[in-house]
Image (cartoon, rainbow, N blue to C red; front, top):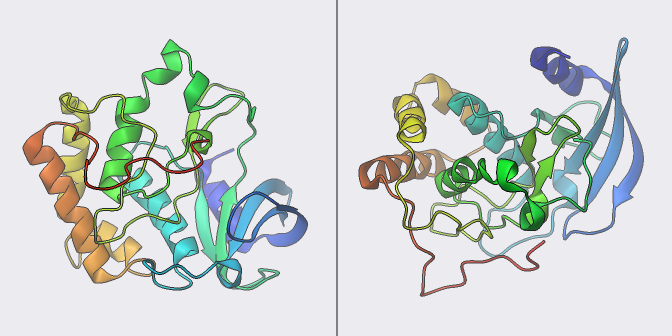
Length: 240
């Protein structure tokens, strides 16, 4: 199915809750989405189900889920499943709605084979860029066609360094030139008034978009994946 068709269905389809994911800090639901002849399984995260955090503004995590998708798309990396922000027709109020990715939950970062590990430089760079504070091994999914997807980006885009991830495989190594080029392409569009800035504006604060742009510039200038910080915890818990 065409991605634009999926996004239209996510944005306008009729939602019916099917169940709740019981593992996790925030309320997350499986929802059936119908739009004409299109039927999708989706993951719905309402703002009202978010647990308050001391370091993230309240009721913003679902917005950050959408922002991660938009950044992935702007880079042309297709890492994040199609995600929209629903304000109408959402059973528990406004929240993010993401296409559910069929996958084997027993297959994740910690048991990737060599062909799957080749995607890790892009994953690591993406998390550095969006400042992901919670990249667990189980957030890397492989669909039945072998394509990699990343999920759970609510704890991202903070202006302070919050990176916590299990993916440090390429720490200290050069960033592949083609990935630096992708970053160079998106950086000008993160300036106020530019296309990517406008797409992110409903979901992030201006200072968060500015911090995103600065992280990208710093990564391109260094040309190297950083080492894990020694002055704070660099890994999430649990790891999967």
